[in-house]
Length: 109
Image 1 (cartoon, one colour):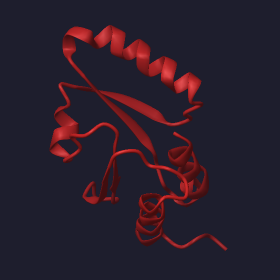
Image 2: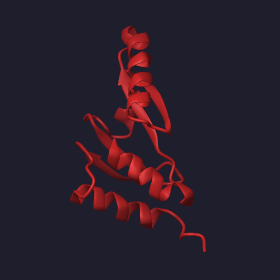
Image 3: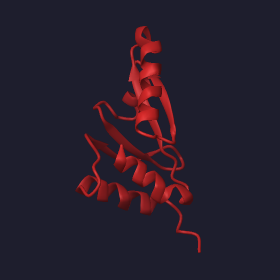
């Protein structure tokens, strides 16, 4: 979570919106909701988290691994996908930063 929070903090003012998506089986909806709320508090996630019944949205977006990350453009198109952990200082993190830089408008002056 530190990498995601860092991206959110760095690019939020320029329009980056971070959301969390947690896939779950409908039979476990209440337990999954509670687990998501607990993780949100523990990790100090200050962005929205959605529950994705049966992973429907995640599968459509091509995010079948856990964890997985996607950068969506303003039109909802997937600009970049990353499978696996996203860690500060890793090449995948730098790649995500570069993709965000290209996708967002220039910094306000």
